[in-house]
Image (cartoon, rainbow, N blue to C red):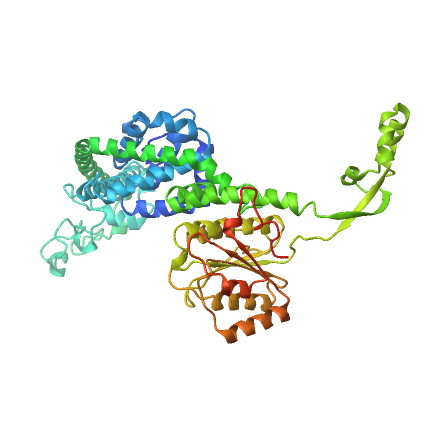
Length: 592
């Protein structure tokens, strides 16, 4: 993970394959981690590697840090942050909560990363000049690596056998006449490269054409001194020696270029280290504060998961990435924290009421027959139970239990469970701010949870004035399972403004009429402060009769409430003040 070919690493903490797989999985699952990688990578070089190091220092049982000489100089900031974290006062309190726990360690990593990134943006840790020095050092490290690679290639070519060295004619032509003192610049333009004859690059054609008085080569075999010896007639040994000498000069020039790049990188690295020494105390305070904040968030994560993750958004267990995002959103939003506490209590009370009131509705015995499953054992007729007191009849009882021969009675009664979908219309106007918002959303999320447990689809329409409708499909898939992201977005949404009942109820009727939510009923959650058009009211009542749906209203009567309009529109009205400790009437008879 991040291993470089020159033996240095962008990471400062050792990690094994399991650690790397866990980090990759969390990064893939957590949107908060992905966003932090993107934003931090624009400000600090190797920021993703810094997060990996912080995670490993919190998650691993045995934390091993690399010595500075095997890590990149541009990773000096990460090395110092990890050192300050592990030596800080908050580390002993944070580490027991994150040790070998992917979700807790991931949440702490994201929290620390966000806090440090914010401090860097505000110049509370590093100045803009310090960050520029880090980026400059990272570029010079890359240039040094490229120069070293080119020097190694040139040296390999120079040390090759003569036949191999001239095997590529193009390479031999490019290097056969490089001057001994020429510097090797891999980024130079063709016009900047010295001419093959060693003269200037802009030599004229007359300089390249020999004069008539000058001998152009050894005498020809027939004694004609004016005929030059062609390259094909030159001895092959001379050509090989010239090519080898040219390649050796190119290798020496490339090596000198690599040494210059190395010297420049070392100078910049010393400058960066001096800058980090100057801000050492500020960096330590920032890391300490970030770690202390992370410890608080991690400590509150189990309660958050209990309130939100245990049911909402899942047909099963939340993965570690979802728990990271959930914990982060709850920790950063005091309103959600308060809502989580109210919702958790309300949900538990509501489910207890429904188990007590609905699951045991009035029923009557109407048939006696042989039991079909072990679920029927609770309804054995009395004389079957008498057999358990006799040693011989008890064996016969057990035989008939296995064979399906025991007599049980069946019950029948009015099923008051709801079976159709729910459409919840939630008032988010300005009059619902404060305590009313908390209570209304707690009621809404409780109905969402009840619908999930009853395998009913649920759709929420948040409204204020006519232009402020926002709909949340709580079951974006084809099943009844609730999307946790939609639940969190719903909890955070608040539009403000005026109140209009007509637009959300029309939207709900359209959902029922379109066929997607047939047999659905409407739950209106509001403080009742609204007036409606009389003609629209008549049309709405006709639609109720035609589509055969009901409207169940809950008045959030925390303060001033006007319920006349709501009582006229709804078939049944409950008030939040009726929500006693045992759940009251609100959840005992939800819409059918």
